[in-house]
Amino acid sequence: MTDAASPVAPPPNPLRAYAAVTAAYWAFMLSDGALRMLVLLHFNSLGFTPIQLAWLFLLYEVAGIVTNLAAGWLAARFGLAATLYGGLALQIGALVALAQLDPTWGVAASVAFVMAVQGVSGVAKDLAKMSSKSAVKLLAPKEDGGLFRWVALLTGSKNAVKGLGFFLGAALLALAGFQAAVWGMAAVLAVILIAVVLFLPAGLPGRMKSEEAWGGWRSKEPRVNRLSLARMFLFGARDVWFVVGIPVYFQAVLSDGTPEGRREAFFLIGSFLALWIIAYGAVQAFAPRLLGGKGQPEAETTRKAILWAGLLVPIPFALAAATWVAGDPAEWLTATLIGGLLVFGFVFAINSSVHSYLILAFGSAERITRDVGFYYMANAAGRLIGTLLSGLSYQIGGLTLCLATAGLMALASWLAARRLRSV
Image (cartoon, rainbow, N blue to C red):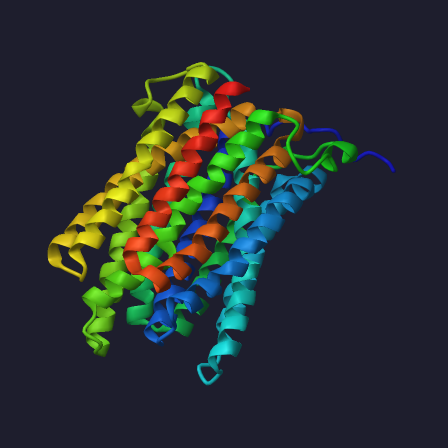
């Protein structure tokens, strides 16, 4: 077998390449957030149970696990630009397919169809994410904490845009309806894909020799593997309450069952989740400053990763205790949940930002797409576990069990993060 091209030099203007990659990632995540909110609120209003709602997103997360492993090889073999374009094109295809959903179909057919479409969207999302994050490793300046600042800006701004997508999805559902919203997003994303293809400078790196690209699915760096385990439980802790539990609880509290009441609930739920994601993204973007400045040694950043993982643990347990004491929905409980989940978001954002830096710091430049792919495979596995447990725990034990399960996942993330010190 002949070798593919060895790694190419970065583009002559890495800042322009970084801007183009970031813009493409923004566009994708705007559509991703809007699509998730559209699907969740639309099918919840049709009477789907929490378990059925969770099933709608399961293939999305399963696809992420598989895609992150394959995407690392694809990017290594064909270059990061190819996988970035592929992610955007697949998302357009998923939106066009979802617009074909027939309201006369039965529950089983609707669930199976939406699961399949969400699976394609999951492939698209992880192609785009892996491409963008890997590009930062290769484009960022090496001096003066440049890597931490560039990855924090990319990740933080991406989540702020995704938060806007949550609000956009809820607003489009209320104002335009499901099918019109999906067609509109597909058209806009197609225009953005064309613009990115025209604007992205030639020479975006990522290709490597074929035998390196076909390396083992696990990283050769123990710290990458242990960080990936902590990441899996971290995102499981978030999605246990985020995917089904809190949106379903809020819709039950806020909607009076009338069409007007449902539309108002759509706006309120979308606004809260959008605010949460935007605030989370803002904290991520400022994480390097919040954690004490530029150019810190990896050992110090690792110590802070363990500290902040521990700070996350008591928050969902405290919220679970509040819901257990309240028994039934109450105004004070809703206010407590909003405040508590915003605190959770702040601590979670610090954890996520430190992880995003450490995976690029720990990963080898020679196989960065593989290391990042493995890491985000663990991320997708955490979302899959969290999504499944979100519907299951809410249906069995309501919001109390849902939040307590999130606490157990956060505890597991902290225990995994502590093992980074022994490497």
